[in-house]
Length: 292
Image 1: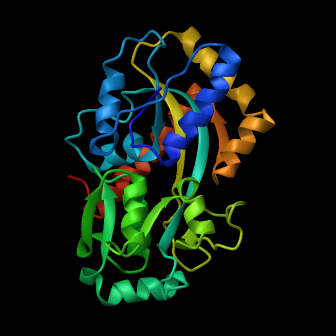
Image 2 (image 1 turned 90 degrees about the vertical axis):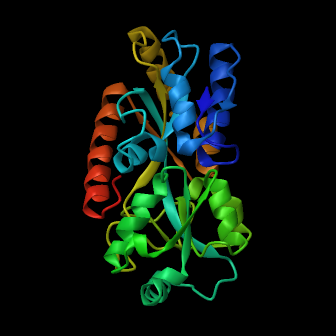
Image 3 (image 1 turned 30 degrees about the vertical axis):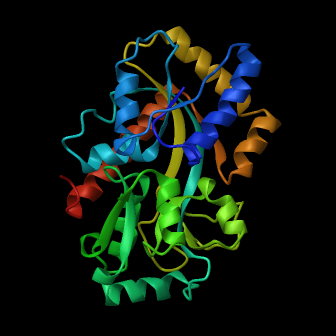
């Protein structure tokens, strides 16, 4: 199972939980292999070059799957090149600052950024990652252009969060599912979550909409994708197995312990969700001048 990102991100965590449960159900070893690089492009291209025999699959995620193709017209794959098989989980994004920051509310923080955008820095991953368009829409609703901020590229979500912690950047928007320990310890402080409802894991953190800002509505996900030409029987086996896991309290509990939720979709539903997500991302990237 290829993970197109470094270790210690939500996709990596989810892949390792999924692999353990698949091994028990299928009685075959499932090896998780991190093939990081270029915001998920390196691992995606390796998957696309694999034989369609079911022996090499990938746990895909929002940024590399739909957001990066919407931002970068030169990317060497399209959003629909990897074959959608089954969606596994979903996770809200959280807008975070350092735990000792004097900012405790999103409106105050964004007012500070609006007053001097060029003095603030954000982190991105490769082409952009899941958070870049979500951040752009949130900042736009606050009257701030993403292009006016300084940007630093890092290798994966964990590095983006570390840059906030050590002060190299001022804030970030990353998956709730990859920052649980950092929030619990107070190393990071969440000012808002994405979506239209608060997360069960962090019920005291308001949505951006509750704070008066629209557009921070992207929910990240993970899902299994395969190389083109994958046999229908292999797809059906994955869909059925992950559906069973979605009813398994042990698997559900491990996913929810990260701050994520089980979000099963079959191959057809997964494809339609990706298509819609890419269309929204493409429209956003074009409107805000982020498409290149």
